[in-house]
Amino acid sequence: MARIKPQALLIQSKKKKAPTRISLSTIITCNLVVILIVLSLYGTYKHWHRRLSSQPEIGLDEFEHVENSGEPKKYDLPKYAVLNTSKGQITMELYKDSFPEVVDRFIDLCQKGFFRGMPFHRVIKNYVIQGGDFQRLGAAEDWTLKVKPNKEHAISPKHEAFMLGTTKSVSDSKGFELFITTAPIPDLNDKLIVFGSVVKGEDVVQELEEVDTDEHYRPKSNIGIIDVILKQEL
Picture (cartoon, rainbow, N blue to C red):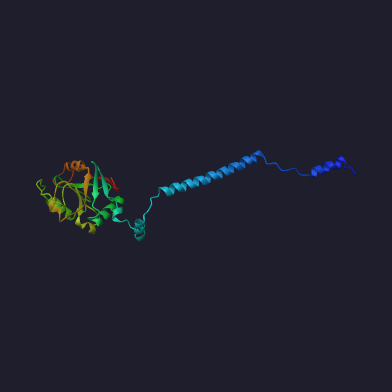
């Protein structure tokens, strides 16, 4: 048997490839990539889980209601309006069932900022506080200026003190007159649409009523509505 020379053995050993070794840095990098992928998937899962959990469940009746009409129904409308005035806050309950069209328009104008900065331009003690566009008085000027305030008014089931109303010509006008009664006024039944009442802030109404006025019942100091906040619940 022929013996293999040492030089040949050396050449043969060089031809045999040793197994490739994976460096420690490569192992660490791969582990970090896997961890980042797992964390990313977990974060995505938590995000969507939290988002789905925060959405209220919709019953079948509500779903059918929303599907049949894209417009909000009267029970979806705000029930209260908080008038932030120069004397304080007045919380009004809105009569959505009695005069839905008037309440709808009032809410729409509130959302558009129509009442922001509106002045109370007429204050008749023991009678009414009027707010709106001073340049667009119309018929409202007639009955507010001709009235003789009287503390002996008989109580009306419809027009008691601290009621919120507007003129009956509201649908034909581009403006919106606001009236807050400060005493029972039965003679306004033919002129005023009552669409709300004061449930909190009667003392603020009385403070507004006490401001000094001229002979035409115009306040000598600036008083009015700063803004209006609509609420579903108190």
